[in-house]
Amino acid sequence: MSINEAESSAAPTGELAAPEQPPPAAERPRRGPSREMLSSAATVVAFGFVFLIYAVWLQGGFYDVTRLSFNVSRSTPQLVLAIAVAVCLCGHRFDLSVAAMATAGCFLGVGLFIDAGLPMGMVIVLTLLVGAVAGLLNGIVVTKFQVNAFIATLGTSGLFAGLTVVYSSGQVVGPTPDSGPLPGWFSGAGSVGDFQNKAPLGVAVLVIAAVVAALLISLDQRFPGPEPRRRVQVAVLVLVGALVVGAAWALGLAAEFDWMIVIVLVLTLLVWTVMKYTAVGHAIYAVGSNPDAAAFAGIRINLVSLCLFVFSGTIAALAGILVAAQQGSAAPGVADPLLLPAYAGAFLSTVILSRGRFHIWGTVAGSIALVYVTDGLVVGGVPYTWTQVINGAVLIITVALSTFLQRRPGS
Image (cartoon, rainbow, N blue to C red; front, top):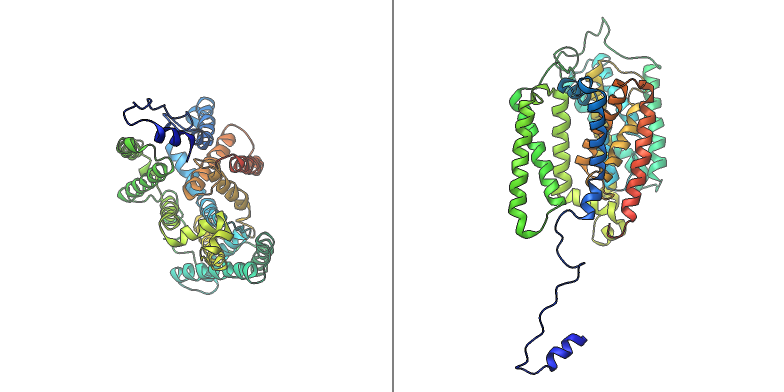
């Protein structure tokens, strides 16, 4: 029994109780944004400041809806690789073979059609299966032979890259007069890989509405707010979502959506749903947070790791198919430059409305922001050769910020 309890029990029955003291400042409910909310939003504010500078510096040379949509469309293989990397990092696994697997997927997407004469639909399925088998190989090396994931996937990256060079003899593989062109729906003018081939307006609006709803749900769950104001907060978020969808329609953003953008957004929605609302996603996050506790809870750590590598291999192969659709050919090392920005985008998610935790929407948003930052500098006159320098600097800064946020008290 505490001193206060002893005093209250010893007090006479008819004695008036002392007035209740207000709770200490640390226990009072917060009015306004918490320090966690402010730190989580700091990166968003920083990017907003950069884009405000672009608005003054570049004016109409950068903020054009068609140009912005084109930048996202041409970067869809990079976004897809970033999603694969982010899911692995959620389970505390590195996969450095995704770029080499994407290159292999590009060669398979072109080579199986040209050399083997298989229908393109079958080619896509076989390419995804090969990516899954490659991921399974990574998982077996890591889980069964206990090789560090960093070393294992670095080795398989060289293996996959070497096989593509052996197959192509170091040359570009593409359609020939004897093989004929790639299917018109897959590559070329009016195809899935053509930015000028826009998705139907209804499909684009539906995808935008689904993405906005998912983002608002994530934001609401990230910062739930006090219970008395929950209805007001939900109503405000619904209003914001309606305004965003209406603005996308009014500004002509929906009309600029091509099939590549639709594919990457639908993939993001599917992966986010699995990670957030299924037992598999919860197991991945549990393994990534504390493997020992996850194992004690009955989660099969090795099986989760196998699933992660199979997923990343399959999605990397999909990224290679998208590269083949965009370029209509395959070249050695064609996806190698995508590895660094993919990891930069994944680590950006840890400092975008987060305190050191990887998440899918932050990965996509960070990757797109990185694309815009790089493109804005190029429009402003910075040589394109500085792209890798910018990506490397962003990766270092985001890892440092993520480490700082994780070490703060209460994180």
